[in-house]
Length: 272
Figure (cartoon, rainbow, N blue to C red):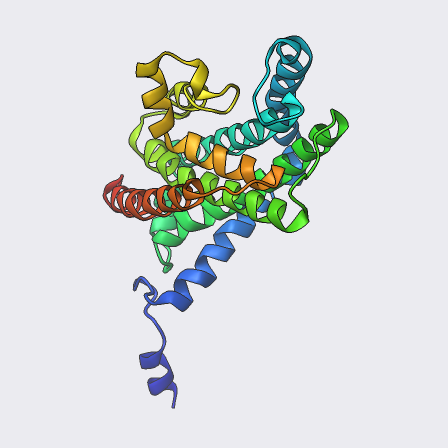
């Protein structure tokens, strides 16, 4: 009986396979990161300060001189863009966290355990998604304080929020690849953020693309960040998102599939 049980059990050195193992190991890895959040609340606080500053700057400094056709208040136009920028910037913690684990040798220790290797990345991205949810809640409180409202109703607002979080989760996989590819935490921090600034500002997040030069408007209209911002803005304000919703979903799905595969492949080849 003992011989049969030992034969049926996975070897200490065998990497488990199958969706059940992946889900279990991913959740174990995610909870490991989530337990750190209460002990490092400063990180959550500082991650919310920047978007709050953007809200105050655009609403109270620039808001009086910006008019957007179709919107009674600039706040209704602006806040979905701020939401999208906030969760997108929040995805950068994935790359920084993985680079830190690599520098401390933790990745090599996890690799030596009988666990699904992809679970290390899935757990990290899922835990960072939870962190993004907490930051989004803070931003939502700030948005309501400055006068933003769910003009499209609670159901459409929920759909818009889920779309934003899905998009942020997709970009976490880009950041995972960045974190596994650079040589240090500092490099991951720089490489993870620098490309997101043109991505978010050359878009419809803060002003209509109609106000841009034609060549720049063409780039901004094709920007996936514009698609998700326009789709969620329409849902929050009670408008039909049209094709923007499907474009945003297609972008998020495609980015997740492609960069998850690349990140897992990079993980398998990184270090010993």
